[in-house]
Structure formats: C-alpha cells, structure tokens
Amino acid sequence: MAKVDNKDLVTGGFLSFSLMAQEIIATMFAFYSYRQGEMALATFYLAIAGVLLVALGIFYIFDRHNLARLLLAGTLLIGFFFLLLGASDASSLMWCLTIVPVIVGSFAYRQSLFMLIGIFAASTWIMTGGSMPFAVPNYSDIVVVRFLSAYAILSAFAVAMDNSRFDSLSKYQDLSSRVDQIAHQDQLTQLPNRNNMEGRLEKKYQQYRLINQPFSILLADLDNFKFINDRYGHDVGDDILYAIGQVLSEPLRGEDIVARWGGNEFMVLLPTANCEAAVNIAERLRAAASELDMDAQGDKLRISLSVGVASIDKCTGIDDLLSTAENGLYQAKHMGRDMVVVG
Image 1 (cartoon, one colour):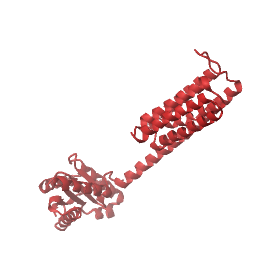
Image 2: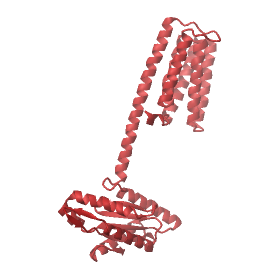
Image 3: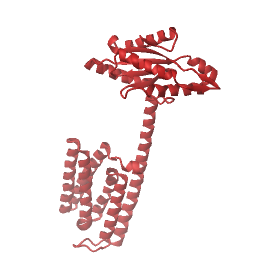
Image 4: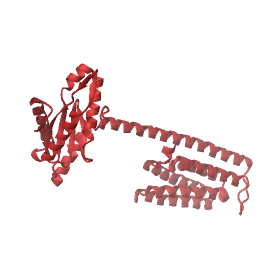
C-alpha cells in the first residue's frame, strides 16, 4: 500500500461531493432539531453548515483543495466530539457516523485508518465513562454497543471500498501508462516510434517558425536487410535492428533523438544542426554502424547504412523535409549504398 499512501487521494469530484453532501446533511439536521425544539442543536448544525459553506467557497473560488479538505475534516471532527461529549441524543449520534466516509475519502490510506482507530478509541473511552475533567452524558449500554458497532462496521466497509477503489485506479494508471508506452515507443528497439517522432517533428517545426533556428533530420536505412532476414531468419534481423538502434543512439548529443521510423529505417532528429553539421553527424553514425561486429550461423555479417540528410532551412515544411530526406536516402541506395547523401 506504500504506493497508494504517498498519493494525494483527494480528487476534486469527491471533495466537492463531500462538502455539498455535508452541507445538506447539516442543514437537514438543523431543521429537524428546530422542529424538535432543540434550538442549541439547531444552532450548532447551522454553524457547521456555515463553516462548510466557507469551505465550498475556498474550493470553488480560490481552488485551494487541501485547505478546503482540512477545513471539512476539522469541522466534522470538532462536531463529532462536541456532540459526543455534551449534546448527544439519538439523532446526533447518527450525524456522527456521517464523518466516517469523509475521513476515509479525504486522507491517505494509513492516515485515515489511524484517525478512525483513534476516534473509535476516544469514543469508547467517552461513552463507557472514562474519567473526564467535566461531565459527559451517561450513555446506556445498548446505545454504546449500537453506536460503536455501527461505527466499526461502517469504518471497515469504507476503508475496504476505498482501498478497492484506489487499487483499481492504480491498475488503470499502470494500464494507461502501458498503452501510452506502446503508442509512443517501439517495442523491439525501445526507441521512440514513428508516431512519437512525427509529434516531435511538428513541435520542432513550430519552434523553428518562431525563432528561426534550423534543424535537420537523418533518414537511415539498413542495407541488404531483406537478404539478411531471408537467409538468417527474423531473430537475427531483430538483433541487428536492436544493435543499430543502440549504435545510432550512443554517439548523439543529449538533445538529439533517434527513432525507429519503420521496418529497417531509423530517423534521427538534430534540433540545432544545420546541413553541414548534420552531414558530419551522419558520416559518424554510418562509420559506427559499419564497425558493428555481428555473426550469424558462423558467418560474419557486414552491416552498413545508407543515410539521407535534410535541413528545414532548405525545405518548405515538414512534408517537404521528409520528402527531401527520402530522396537523399533513395540516391544513396541507387549510388551503391553505405553512404550519406543530402537530399
């Protein structure tokens, strides 16, 4: 449960619901007490409703959720012990039970559990005649048993439901994170995928239009990859793709990004490189790939890359940038592979 305890478990929806629900409950109890001629209790419940109205204002107007939460919990705790110590009747004890779900929903798992246990122990002490510096109501045994039993059962169910809710939330967040990872990361190479890179390119292009800082891309393709796949199998091909992904990533600067573009193609985004710098980086990456030492079925594999280079300052947009890089890659393949060509 440590992971859950460290979270802020209060959502805006639950806190808002608790504030409004307690506002309505306090108002209804005030009306009931007034009808019963209990003016002191009616005034007390109206005071509770007034404080909760302030908490609602803090929540909605100032957007101070933590302060509203503490004000809600503090007001209910004070009201609980006030009623238990001096003004309690059967209806007041019913109101006291309404604080249980609020405490459970307003605090982390361990915090709410300790608070509920503490309240239960204090309630038992008060209702069974523990020594107090002032007079307290004389509760009958049947009232004590009914109230403490109801409090314990309600607390157990509230804690169990809350724990189940946040277990479900945790599983949902894990699943959501996994889905997001699948959507933006290539599972074989563990690099960003095409969808991820397209988003980065679009964002970088928008920055370029604002500050006019050129950037470049490299489109690299493994030479003769189909032959390797067909002869040695897809497992060997997958190993090569992973190794190339690592080779392309290692020599890059921290700001540069390499992604698997699709199949046996990789794209490198160079956010601050002009065309000349991009060519130098591409040559370095091509040379590093050619030094990759891989064997399959006793054969030493020769790994090489053809690379197309394109810079945004020589293109009219993202589509033109990609088309230019593809053209450079096509020329590199056509001219004999294992080379870098500016599109």
